[in-house]
Amino acid sequence: MSAGPNGREALEELSWRAEILQAMYWMHGEGLADEVRPAALADFLATDSDTVARHMRQLAADGYLEAVASLGEPAVARSHYRLTPLGLAEGGRSFRDEFADLTRPAHGACAPGCWCHDPRHAGEPCPSHPEGARA
Image 1 (cartoon, rainbow, N blue to C red):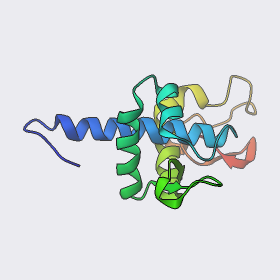
Image 2 (cartoon, one colour):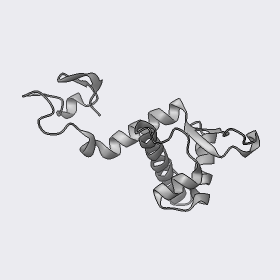
Image 3 (cartoon, rainbow, N blue to C red):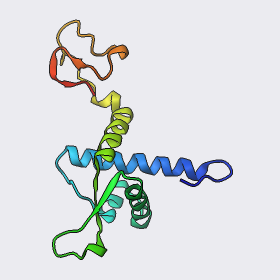
């Protein structure tokens, strides 16, 4: 990550990393796509595909994404990316941080007196829903 005199470039890199990993994490979680082309992600993020492609290449170099080839596509023309385990973990963490207020259980979703909304218990399994940790 390169930083200019005021760190603007570094901040921009971090912002793009979060945007791309969150979007890919959401798409993966919703079953919409496990592999994504930069152009398709650019449409989703309402930006140009060259910018997204550049950042996706860097995310692949950093270990967050893996470039993959489609059937019939030569290996040198790998134009799809998928999350690596590191990318999945970081995308999930970033997504939970960004959307915590929207993804918490709805009113009445937990048993009366449930403590899972207490910040001291963030990330712990909800006793009303022990099968998964609260996001």
